[in-house]
Image (tube, rainbow over all chains, first blue to last red):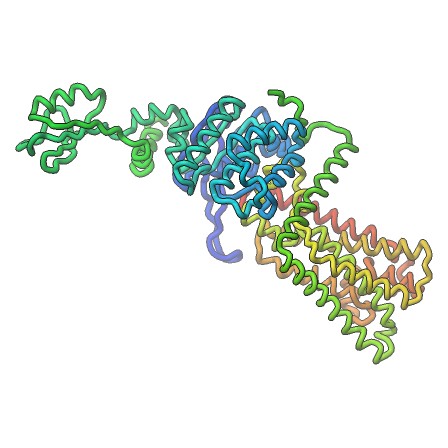
Length: 321
Length: 287
């Protein structure tokens, strides 16, 4: 569906006034390559300014790269704009594609003409999405009067009415409550499964990624640092698992051979370990009488944060070169 | 699921059906704009009355002054009304049609990201910009301008021949295209900078005001500039001189009176060529 080879894009950034300022060349994306198959959901992560949105703009045909080959469904995005975007759907969380002062259903009707969706197909899709996203109560409400969650649902419907093959989602759940987030994730999973829509998801909400994407790509400073399964990212770069032990009494020496002592607070002691939990538990119970034990899994959030902050992957990427 | 029935834009199709589709879409986009404005009734009504008052005040100024002196450089009130009505009618119609390209609107689209939304839709970009603004509140000014023009036609005693009708209609069309071109150029400049917009307004609004009056009242320099450099005199001044049975200045051939429907579209074509350069620049920077 998507093939990107050696994508590179630089910007000239002006400093100072038009006449006296100087311009600095900034490498937004340098030598990025990846491919995405039909029907995949891929999470595309990276801190702000890492090159995420530049990549998305190239893929959607909004930006022309300096060099590199990009094809989406066989087309070069910036060369054949109209044919390319006819097969895309896009939801950018921060702004709406709906006409601000028109009732939602009128916006959708307009988009039907823009995308030239046959009447019957449009009715069918509208019926499906109205049911799945519960659009019914606000189809007659103008976009400006919708809540954020309603607007996001309406925008999702708007992005999918023309049966796109590829859907770009940018921060689709930002600012929503837990229930609203879950509803949107559920819907995305559903259209991915039933309509074979390929989804490229950029988000800061790792909950979105965990619930939707099996594969993640991480970009920072314009280079792709990781491209692979979410699970192996966790295994390779995740923090150690944690064993929280409540002893019967505060132990005189909380150290246990083979375990990393993370902290001790009276009878409660925390240890770090990797691999299966059976051996560490046996060791701890042999060490002193134990009242309770809990195993805490590292959070993906913490893993990603460690990657950005510590440059874990950057060092690894440098080694590979 | 049958997706093959959806015809993808950009596919080969008949010229006629493609034209029908685009026209229909344009109409739908304008209707959406009109319906959106109907929401804000009070501000709509105030704008409609307010903008009509400006035109009325401007014209009332001549209507009160000219009869006191008899003529303005040999032009009667009716003849001035003819020039003024033509320019005002054309400019207001242009403003209605080309409002999406007006620099403040276009730079607003670029800044808010809705320009990207247009680029993400499979309809022609220019059609979407044309359909992004349709300030219906200007409709009162259209009627007013038509009224002033009608007064000018009757008071200056024009003999209604097919030729006169062609000259005046051609003048309006030429001006719509010409000033539309200036709007497009001004809007395109905002892809690079918003600082140039004021300079562009001098040409657009200044040019409009300039050709609302008989050119005889200006000095040589202005007259030459707006005849040969920026050919605004071809738009309404020469056709009106010819309709009134007067000779063209500088010994220009009569043909010059017929060139408005050519000069205007040429300006518009040049403006759209520049627009394409601007859109390509946008694709390089995405700002």
